[in-house]
Length: 149
Length: 163
Image 1: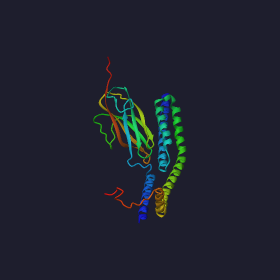
Image 2 (image 1 turned 120 degrees about the vertical axis):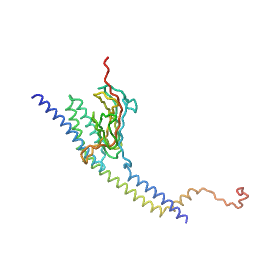
Image 3 (image 1 turned 30 degrees about the vertical axis):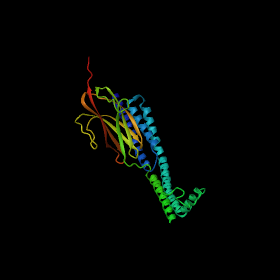
Image 4 (image 1 turned 30 degrees about the horizontal axis):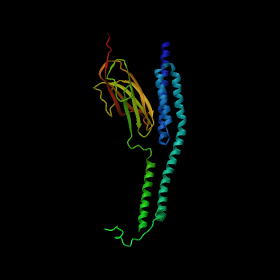
């Protein structure tokens, strides 16, 4: 009878392990979706990884099993709670990325128009300013200066 | 006439620079060739010093290197199996051999991890193959799928001699 109770308890324990792994997989699935929406999932992934490690440690260390498994459960819950915030942050990041891309396109067009309109004037002004201290000399007899062939 | 040439040069420089900038912004974070890596390291966490002859139930300490370059988060499951020279394994067929251990790891894109592995082989075997297979969890189908990556270590497992 006693053996049956112990076996039933062990069965419940192993079921709990499996339930935790299922919870991790469910949280992972939600993280995949969150990542598709632009979320940064690195921290959440590290937590789920730690939860997996704790479940493995719990299998090897039956004395601390309940402590390790409850810690794993807390980590999984932590990730589940953070996913909606991660999605919001991700959507924000995607929005600003799109704004930056659009801005870069608009800037290219605006700068092109400005360059087309004022480019040559700016170029020649700069060209003249750079050469403002040059002395211009007229060479009357090129051959006498020793430069000719 | 010369103004037109200046205009053309300036416009060309601006358009090329703008196109490159936009291309960089759009392509940022995209992975052209996604892949996952699985490596087996020796007891000193280096490539080499792998055990060749071990005793029955002797602890074999190794390390598994797992790296994710798939472009998204991945859930890896590494099966440790004990095969022999007749065991068939390739990129599409996993080994049909008894499983000794299972390791699970979740990695975001661009990260890697080194997992310590301790294995004992309970029976003597010549030309045994310690096979590590990479599987991944598919969240859409809610199942594990063989990812086509594996590494192996050839071993001779002998019984300890009684003096």
